[in-house]
Structures are given as C-alpha cells and as structure tokens.
Image (cartoon, rainbow, N blue to C red):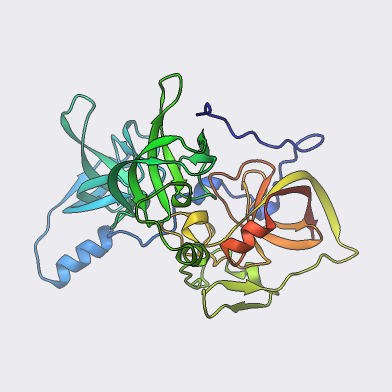
Length: 371
C-alpha cells in the first residue's frame, strides 16, 4: 500500500487573484458543505404538532451566548450524522467548546430541540461516561445511508481513498493498489464502501471507495451499475433562493428520464471584457451518489437547481457565488461548492456520470466575465 498523499493545489501563474465583487462578497460559511437532505424535525414543527394534538410538552431556557438564551423543547428521537463530521458542543452556539467530533453515519440520540437550529444529544466521553451536548440540526438526517457490514474484501484496481462517499466533497486520505486486502465496515447506498486498513507505518486509515473497486460477493450486473451511476433524483428549485434569478436568460429544459435540468451553452461574446484568473484544473460532476454523496438531489449549495452548460462548483472564497466564469469560450455561473474543490479547481455540472467520465480532467485558462 502506498502512503497517504495530500492533494496539492494548482497555483495560477503570477499572483493569485482573490475576487471580491460588490454585493457578491458572501462568506462561504453561509452555505454548508453538508449533503442536500430532507430537514429533521425542528423546534417549531414539534411544538406545533404537540399543540395540534393537545399534548403537553416541557420547555426550558438554555444559555446560547445571547442575552435571552434559546428555548428548548424536550423531545426524543434517533437521528444520524449526514455531514463528513459533526461536532457535539458544550453550548448551542457557534464557537462553543467542542466536546466530541463524530463521523458520517453515526447514530445520535436526541433529547431536546432548541429554537435556534441546534439539538441536545446524548453521547459517551472517551472514559465511557454518559454526557450531553449540542449539535447543529443541519448535520443530522432521519435516516442513515450507511449500512454496517464487517467483511474482508480485495481491491480490484488501483484507487484513491476519500474521507467522504462523494467525489465532489471527498478529499484523498490514502491510496490502495490492486489486490490489497481491506476491512469493509459499511455500505453506502450500494455505490460506496466504508473501508479501513493499516499503512506500512502502522497508522490506521478509514475512508470510502466506490464498490466497483472491490471484489464483492454479490456484485451488481454491469448494466445495473452503469444505470445507478447515471441516475440522480432531482427536485426543481422553489425559485425563492437568493440566487433564483441566476438562470435568467438561460434556456433550460428537463430530461424526462433522469430529471436533470438541461441548459443551452452560452458562448462568450467577441467584445466581452474578461479578467484572467489563471490556469485551473477542470473536473466534472453529475447528480449521482458517486459524485455528490448519499443525499444528492441536484440542489446546489446556493439553493438553486443545478443546470447543465451553466452550473459550476467553485471555492467561493476564490470565486464568489454568482460570478460568471468563461471556460473554453463558454459562460458558466458559480452556484455550487464542494469539499474537494480547492483553489484553482472548478467542477462543471453535467447530465450523467458517463458524460463526466468521457470529458475527464484537464487544465485550461479561466476568465471572469466583467459586466
């Protein structure tokens, strides 16, 4: 097995340009890199349900760094972590002391719901003692997309190991070679496997690789695998997002088979004013779970539905959301992001996994369209 490798960023020629464009200057923290998902029950929905059923419920005030604090309703259910990792904090507020960090798929016992987007959960400390803390609702889901397994499997081809089951958000944590043997500990929607193994130096690596790289006992038919890679459940945007008008002037249609929103290519005009951004690594992604993870639904981090020939995923601290970017003479709009998308890297949204594979990875000069 090869040692861990850090994915290097591609430096542009000359000084790296940071784009700050008027009202488009938005903090990347506004949009989380968690997977698009159905929201879990919150304070308002639970208290309203109690009221409608004429049931009594208990609330208490919890300190959250504000003067008034936050109201919490006592409520118990079982949820699962839906982001790469989630922090259990001492108080329901950003910046509070982190008590424990838990990974994707971890089962969480919720005991209370705050009215500020946090929930109170129970957990065990390193010493095994029971304790409680607070976790963001946005890091939770009602269902787990990872089924536990425990088997020894063989790697069928050289591959990289990611820290998340999705190429857009997953970052490399290791590398495997053909015929390596690893422990398979989880299956993610039949597309990814959570695996663990030891490096030569004795360090343990836990991560994710596509099932197609493993010799599994019950392998899917090749056609079924191809279909699964190309499928994507897409929901149309409600149109009330901050970036809902980003598709103005773009002709779009919806593929009736896949539900993918299709846009027509927009060539840059000959007299357009362009600002060189440098040489970028160009990759491609589609709405399937191989690219976007277990809860992919075609909705971008800015809230709009991804559109082919239009949507690109960027590092928003380098290219602000809403920026119009020219790649090989075609105009795209920065509407999405991803954990694996670093400086001088752009991921272009396409209609199918096969299309993304065919287009591959390449490097080219990129420009900002100035209007």
